[in-house]
Image (cartoon, rainbow, N blue to C red):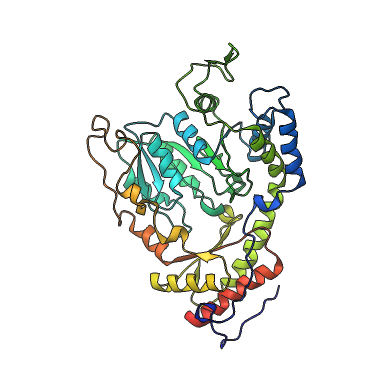
Length: 426
């Protein structure tokens, strides 16, 4: 593959020069693959007049079919569909019995939904360091363990898998549960096994930016029959309840509880059934395109690109590199964006706990997990500097997003843009 190398004298776009890429790139994954199949599947549901997953005048059972196919795809015994990825996390935490008085270890680098689901369960998030892949660092887990630790939530960010073997070993040795947040990594694998199937439960998202999408949607997977039962009943109003037709719905049996409505609807299930059939092709394209960009930029002087690890990063959704200082990272990221390269700092270069609602423990109501001394006698304080290595990596790191449907000229342009910026700034 060849690409154009801008002359060293060409001014940077951020300084008024012409950008290397002068068009928006289609960074979407599953959304970019939506076509006639999805349209037909949605029309079938609309024509059936049965948009609810459990009954209707002509129920097509699209959600149930998707659950079966998704479980088969990832190699799990059970799959329970949800209205979104955060709902899947809520189901998983409820199934594991996480609640007031419990702590859940979560990486400092993640989307805020990971933290929100823990707090909504009335448990406390405890933040741990990440490694240079921006994934949870297993070596930091002993420092975060307390007598209240109930679970660990490794988050497989941006298509890259957490190093799960030491996480699982640590969890087993301390009697902890593991809930995998695989929202951003549907189809990614760790040592040949699908992420989400390694811990007690795994949770996925199908929001618009994900590998496959229904706009919103989620699913929980597990091999444990009882955890599956608990997740399903919690998501369906707790199970065993009177319906408007004077019947009792009980989909999985066992003792009912007071739950929530976190169910997926038939339109989402219909779309996802079509999208799942396209996932292998999407993953293959992701692997190809990311490899091309990575090989094109990893030899550029001044960029620190970590070594490849196919056991963890085969389906990475981009290329991550580091600069010597935060100031250089800011300048390079801004210059790359001006050149049309989809680049930036991971989550703006800030840990998730930098969000003011987390730092200040702002919740919609009072009570656990931050205002309940009977469960948590000691207050917990969040502050910048809690995870100094993570903050340093975030400050110096720059990520390039790679979409599966980038054209050859898009990949050429990204590499040429990085070379141009590096030539000027590094």
